[in-house]
Structures are given as C-alpha cells and as structure tokens.
Amino acid sequence: MEYRHLGEAQFRFGEFGPGYLLRGPRTDVGVVRLRPGDDATNHYHSAIEETFFGIEGEATLWIDGRQSRTIGVGDVYQMQPGEQHYFVNDGAAVFRALFVKAPYDPNDGIQVPWRPGEPEPELAPGR
Image (cartoon, rainbow, N blue to C red; front, side, top):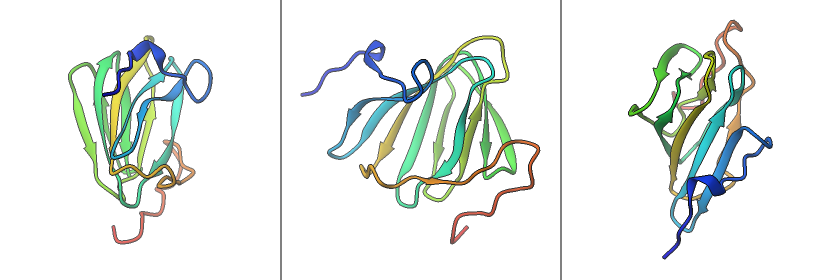
C-alpha cells in the first residue's frame, strides 16, 4: 500500500506545474497546479492515456490546438494517446486538477511547442 496527501506534491516549477504523488509501477498519480497566468506546455503521450479531475478553480484545456474546453471543479477529461493537451489559467484564482496516467512510462511525453493564437500544431502521427 502507498499513501500520499495532496499537500505533498512537489511541483516541477516550484509553486506550479505538475507534481507527482505516486509513480508506477502501473500508473502515475499527481496534481497540476496553475496560478493565474500560468500554463502547462503542450504535449502528448504516444501510449499513455491521461485523465484530469478538476478540484479547484478553472482553466482552459486546449486539445490538439484546435478546440478548447473549460475545466473546473468536478469536470473530468480523459486524453487518449496521441491527443495533444495544453492548459492555461486565464482566471483570477488558482487552478488544480488531479491526474492519472496509465500505463506507467516515465519516458512517454512528447513536447509540441504551441500556444493559443499560434498556427495549429502538427498532429501526432496516426491522428
């Protein structure tokens, strides 16, 4: 058995970004935290599905640089392998979401430089 508390997450960029709570052997579990104005880089996973559960505030979730959705408290979005995802907190409050990634593969993350307002990014192979 493993136990963690949300408050234990060590965020990649100090006060924001993804913070892992559990890593492997079959899944990753963590929390992403974005302050007003923060974003999380556009990326996808070739074999991993990633599910986000909104637990605080709101953010904009961009899918493949082509469509956007608001994710807020109680919302659940599951990204399939190959689907690019990018978060930006355009609001005035902190945004947090739990995430679960499976299957576990710490090397399965492909960065695709893109931000809203730029030309649409090239889709992942097979999409």
